[in-house]
Amino acid sequence: MSKILVVDDSMVIRKMIKNSLQKEGHEIHQAENGQEGFELFAAHSFDLIITDINMPIMNGFEFSEKVRASSGTSCDIPIIVLSTEFSDEVKERGRNIGINAWMVKPAEEEKLLKAVAFLIENTKMKSA
Image 1 (cartoon, rainbow, N blue to C red):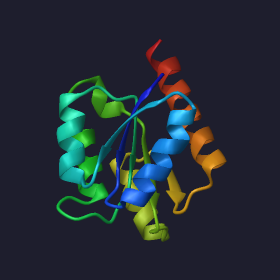
Image 2: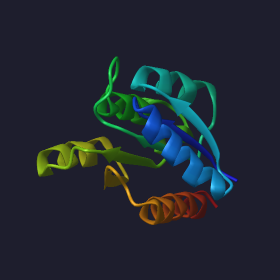
Image 3: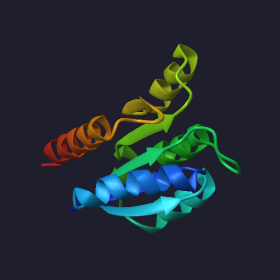
C-alpha cells in the first residue's frame, strides 16, 4: 500500500481521486490548498503527490516548488498535476519545476491509476 497526498481545492475532485485510489489499496491524505498540502508533506512520508494548479492560498506550482526545494529523499517524490490548465507554457513551467506527469481534468480513472502505479513502481526501482 502506498501513501498518496491529494491536494485540490475541489472537494468533489478529492473525493473522486480518493475513491479510485482507495479501491487499489492506497492510503489517501487530502489537502484543500498548497499550504495545507505542504504542511502534510512536511509532517508525513508520502509515496506520491497529486496536485491541482489553481488553488487559493498557495497554488500547485508554488506547492511543487516547495516540495522540490525540501531536503532529503522526499524532495524526489513523484508529482502528478491534475488540472484544467494544459497550455504548452503551463506544462513547460511544470517540467521546469520537476512535475512527473500532467493530466487534464477530469482524468479518466484508468489513466490516473496507470500513471500512479507506474510512478510509484519506478520510484521503488530507483531506490532499490
